[in-house]
Image 1 (tube, rainbow, N blue to C red):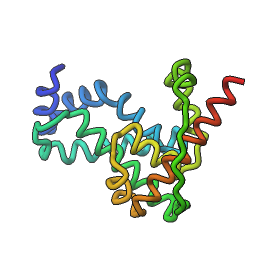
Image 2: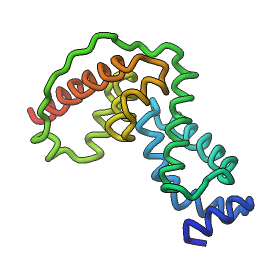
Image 3: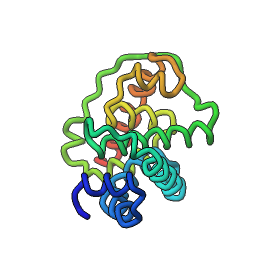
Length: 175
């Protein structure tokens, strides 16, 4: 049971071997998504577990339109957002918005993915959340605002500040 179609069909039929195959094939990718949003390893594991339960419970609703992995990532991101909302009812967002041009192209050329992930862990939660949703997941600021219950300008502000914060961290690495 290796093909995606076989795994999906098996999971729809609640076949334990198919569920295990899904876990083995996709858990590490979904854990990576969870880690981007979690405050620590334990919370990431909780997010992954909850997301997998939702995936197994809702796999009958997967319509084979678009990427199956993308569908699972979306469930994982939504699970992470729900966890963050329940943990932190009032994320502190700053309402001001300033458009700043940042140039970290040379810095990013030498930065490894794991270094970037480690730097992102140091970001304040509001920055990290919006940065992940916009830069990594590809959500628009309008979609982020709706998901988080904030103003669109706040999403833009948090993203701009996250970029600036990340740039400072990257420049410190180069010193």
